[in-house]
Image 1 (cartoon, helix red, strand yellow):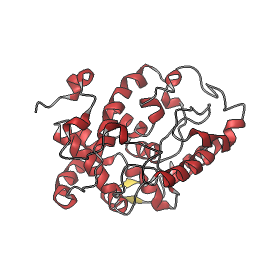
Image 2 (cartoon, helix red, strand yellow):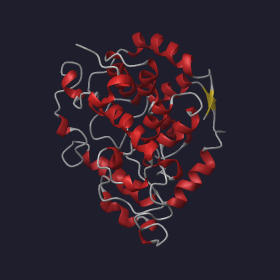
Image 3 (tube, rainbow, N blue to C red):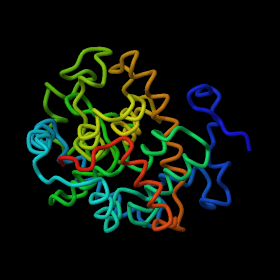
Length: 285
């Protein structure tokens, strides 16, 4: 198989990566992923999003940023964080019940098998490491799940958007209009997103990785934008350009999920070397 170089062929990249991994991943069709109605985990996921949408207000996010973006919870290596993820199953995910380490390896190995740059492979391996917030006592509804802007109206394209009626920002005239506190095409760097692992990890690694990688980490859960384009009115030109990378990454993140775990023991030496190439031995979490 001819491997695509994403740096040269991003516009021509095959939109259906699932077709390239029939024997490696799953029998599920593309439409069966992110099925929030018929999955056997639908009830758990619905209860998760009720809490998430009720409490992820502008004030709530601001308080979480004030606490966690001081990065004084713990100093540890990426591997300390990854070892913790081995105990976590994401309550927001209707597709799989494997622990997070297996998901990270499935994503990164799919990227690596297509011959992409090592920083892209590393992004696949790191992208959910921010879920260590659960280690600090945070409930999953404040860590995982789809992300969305706060400070403006909630899009109906967000999964289980019906529960935003419980959110105090829905009745706050400062926040419940299309633009809310923002200006047209202000750029996502000026937009406060719902709190979770995406923003948290981005803030931890933003000085070490390429811009394309950082966009993938920061916005990979922003499905209402990279799937539905619901917030185009807030994006600037840089966001539009970088979101092409987010969309490409998303296909690996989503369609590499499968019930058969990778051999984490055999893969660890490769990822230890890769992590050490880009990141310091320890990071402040």
